Length: 192
Length: 188
Image (cartoon, rainbow over all chains, first blue to last red; front, side):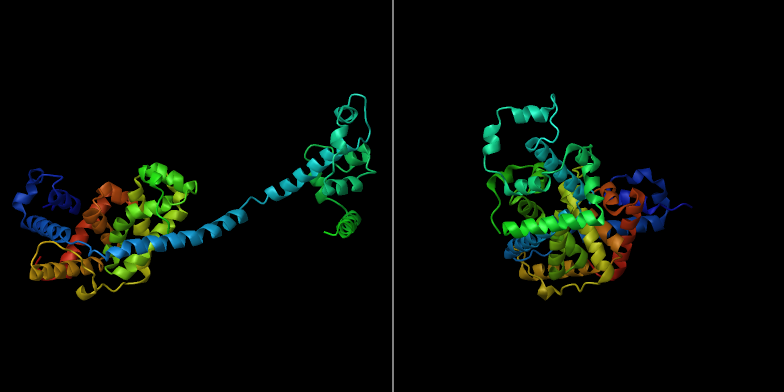
């Protein structure tokens, strides 16, 4: 004799399946007893409510959650910063160097050719812009590279696409020392 | 806590979640306000005492806030919160067996038109059943609570707990059998 499966008893007790669909019930006292008990327990359990807390509790709960979420926000933003892809850092350095090289190229023509856009720019009517007060940091970079010609810049890798970062990160020890000396000197001079 | 922006109150569930993600002040407060009762009741049914249910409810909302970006809107926000709630409660009950409250400790404010004696009797019955539910094995407990008190279908429960509909029904069947044993000769 195959008794009803638990799923079948649940379906019949909940009313999603009729007793007529299980003829076994009419001949099996065990299954009928299980179905009866299941129905009784459904009735017992369904009549039980959660005790209502004090009306003040809901406001307190909201306040607690609000405080916990507020405490979470700063931590989350710092965590987000920490999880920035590390590849962005060298990329940012590279972009900064490229921008500096472009600015310097436009301010101090190294080898002006007849059709060079930079030469056209410098020969154009930008005198007012060049006479405007300069950003001290740009002056600093301009001073450092005043004697740098195009060939030297190319050799240093500053003129090739995507190679500026390589140039910065592959300085020799002596070059690094010289760069550090120049930076210290300039910082001392500017009183920063 | 500042009161929720009145304009937020008109937003539907999806728009409210968007507002939260956009950092609109008060948006998450409104989610809490809308769902705090059902989340608290879910937690209370698991642990059968107010203090733990209160702590668990806070934990549920905090986890919801952290995971709001992962809410895709495939299920309702309440179902998503129940899923978090069940996980939080299952984690808690796996490390701690909470003490259920005695009837004197519970803060009833039920004002139904029963005589004091009848009300006391009903409260006592309710407390016994809640305490018995809180002693069921965790999955059986979760199944019974979601089915009986949160009107979730067997399929929804299967989605929340993982597993098949058949397994959910079997869990429910065994939960009722075990509950009957725990209640002993208790007459409803």
